[in-house]
Amino acid sequence: MIGAHRFDPTILREYDVRGVVGKTLSPTDAEALGRAFGTCVRRNGGKRVTVGRDGRLSSPDMEAGVVAGLRAAGIDVLRVGGCPTPGLYFSVYELKADGGIMITGSHNPPDYNGFKMMIGTKPFFGADIQTLGPIAAEGSYAEGNGSVEDVDLFEAYVARLLKDYRPGKPLTVVWDCGNGATGPAVEALVARLPGTHKVLFPEVDGTFPNHHPDPTVPETLEILREAVAEAGADLGIAFDGDGDRIGVIDEKGRVLWGDQLVAIYATEILAEHPGATVIADVKASQVLYDRIAELGGKPLMWKTGHSLIKTKMAETGAPLAGEMSGHLFFKDRYYGFDDALYAAIRLLSLLARSDRPVSAMRDDLPEVMNTPEVRFPCSEERKFAVVAEVKAALAGQKGIQVNDVDGVRVTSADGWWLLRASNTQDVLVARCESKTEAGLERLKGQLRAALGGVGIAAPETF
Image (cartoon, rainbow, N blue to C red; front, side, top):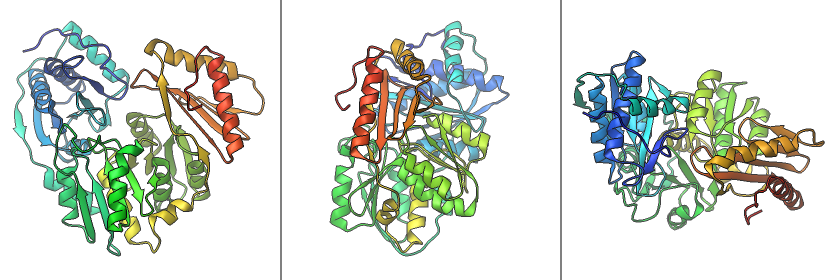
């Protein structure tokens, strides 16, 4: 039974716990984390925790450590086995558990792994995650001898995904699982959906031999784009390694980003929930916020981060939310957590009942010019201070509006630019958007000047 233990300080992140296996993260860390998290569950009055894992080569050993730690804290463990992260979230609801832990490296390279957690049906993040360090370091664990049980929820999860499918015309769809955790569920879904389906790389393989599964990186979507063209498909759908982020290619081979997908979903959801709040993160296009307002909804700009978005959804009662990173959240007919497979089902359902292709829905949105999300190095010690110094320098400047909900998003007649500190890496994140090329260049110049004013060199992209 593990005693007092110190984690590498870099693994306790804002939204989850994540590190490099064999360097900053080990099965011993997993056991300490399981026991510390189990202690938090016990202090919250809970007793039962579900545990799932992705397909990474290190995940079985990490799972064994977590289960041992939970049991030592007196937690009864319900092992749901290999599944996507949203499958683990589903298990907490389905089994009425007091919490859940998903062993996953998410979209990171193969040598990473980590843990996403829920306490009750709420995300466990931020200050909650930071409490795990002192509990483990002091060895101030709850004690007990919990049980362990294997529970197969695969069919129940697939059935729940299909429950909200609204049929229409048959579609031709290409799916790219990227050898991540979604493969088995996608194969089960397409066997029951109408239309023609081609599934790429459904075999779960933690080495990701075909391409890295991160649908926010355009290069990872090239194989899918080619397959959509070859099949004459209506669309292509890709997932990240643990299935909580989606990527979409339209029939013309174009990427639909997270904010564009939210705009498409909002048309249907706001028709059914007039005046409802729709949430998006600070990186989303102004086009999305304007579209939500045009549809009679209440646009709400919020902080980046799946845990932060889920918490704000619960607070506001929003039926829909999304991030540029492809985390999409449906409280409308679903649970409110980020489930890329469910988002795919809702998109297929919407397209099947429409006489318009997804490209036309994308083209309904005004064209703007923007930079990609640019990430550039800045030390952990400096990154938040840089943003604070930039914000202070902007105070009192005429002709701009500064939104500081997450970093600084600066709006002017030309459009907007964003600077924020990543909560998960030692980087700063920047983005600019304008309606004109000249306006975009001016915004990039303003961002360069703001960074230069606090002694930071702008990335080459700017």
